[in-house]
Image 1 (cartoon, each protein chain N blue to C red):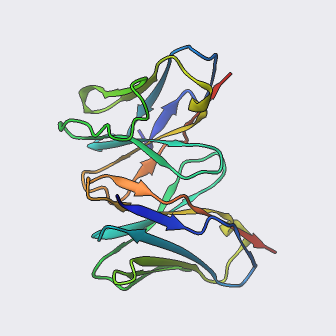
Image 2 (image 1 turned 60 degrees about the horizontal axis):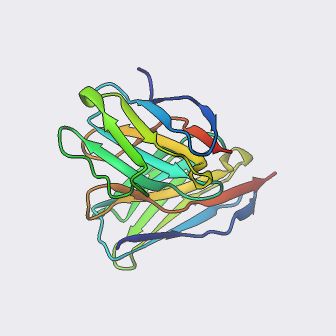
Length: 111
Length: 113
């Protein structure tokens, strides 16, 4: 079955640094991969989608890469701010045609 | 509506009781998901409705769980004979048929005492 793995340990970084989060998947080759942000007590919010033919995608301070050979996506936040502190989830549509999520990585940006 | 609406936002129930959770998706969205999220965990897929197709129920953890979607819009998730391990946040999301961007509600926090 398809599996998505994200760093389970929280990531703590200093304000202004670049945060890098990892998403690995197995047993499937998705046509695209998505990243979401989740704040405590709220539902996830869509951030970015990257397709299999796109190596990299940017949106403001966010950058996502997608390596279909390594079966990995990296999510970068440059010039991080305390307001970026949240849990970040990656998701892909599996062979059954439904969207499944990784367990998420909690990011904490300290001033 | 402006977004996905879920009700109630919080539900406390006694073990053995039945509960119904409601989701109002964004108007025009043909696909609707239910996920469950336990404390500190990721999203566990429960059920997926896509247009008029038969729902994908492969994530429902037991036959105590069921869901329906009436008129291609509002959905209700029903848990019968609730157990303590059912305590979690139940999230609903809707999207257009392409699954390319899900819009989530704020969830229902279910506590089974």
